[in-house]
Image (cartoon, rainbow, N blue to C red; front, side):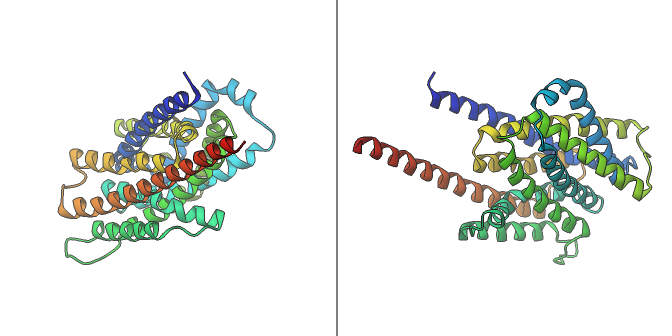
Length: 316
C-alpha cells in the first residue's frame, strides 16, 4: 500500500469518526435539556460532564498522558479549556430559554464563523462567498427565532447560543493548530480538567448545588453527556482533525444540527414546523455551501502544488 492509499484510508477513518461524533453531539442537545428539566443547574451540568470525562481519562489514559506530556503544554490546555468552557456555558445557558432544535441549529453556525476567526489569526480577509454564507446563517437564525405572533424577535437563549457558536469556532481553529503537535491523551485530559475546574468555580459562585443528580432522568443525562458527548466525542474530534481536511471536518460536523433537530422532533421537544424546516434549511445550506466551497479551494491549491512539483522534476 503506497503513501497516498494510506492517507486516503486514514481520511476515511477520520471521516467516519467525525460523523459518529456529529451524531453524539447532535443528540446531546436533547440530553442537556433532559438534565435541565431534572433541575440540574447549568453550572452543575458543566461541572458534572467534564469532571466525569477528566476522571475517565485520568484512570484509563494515565500512562499515555505521563509518557506524552511535554514541558509547557499545560498553557495550551488552559487556553483551549477556557475557550471551550465559555462556549459550553453560553450554549447551556441559552438552552434554558430556547428549544433543543434552535440550540442545535444555531450552535452549528460555528462552522460559518471559522473563516472569520482564521481572518483574525492570519490577517487574511475571507472571500465574498463566505461572507454571503454568514449572512444566510443569520437569516436562518432569524427565521428560527420568529415567535407565534410572527414578530421578528431574538430570544435571549438564541443570542447566548450564538455567542457560544463563535467561541466554538475559535476552539475548532485552535484545535486544528495544536492537535498535530500534542498527543490526544494530553490534549483531552488537560482540556477536561481545566473545564471541570472552571465549572466548579462557577458552581460555587452560582450556589445552586448538585440538585437533580439523584433522579433517574438526571443520572441518565449526566452519564450520556459525560461519557459519550464529552469523553468520547471531543476525543474523537481531536483525532479526526489530524487526518481530515478542515473543510471536510466542517461539512461532517455541521450534520450535528440535523441529528439534534430530528431527535428533538421525535421526542417531542420541537414540532415539525415550517419555521424549523425553513430556518434550519437556510442555516444548514449556508454551512454546506461555505465548506464545500472551501473544500474545492483546497483541492485546487493541492493540484497547483502537485503541478509545480511535476514541473520542477521535469526541469531538473
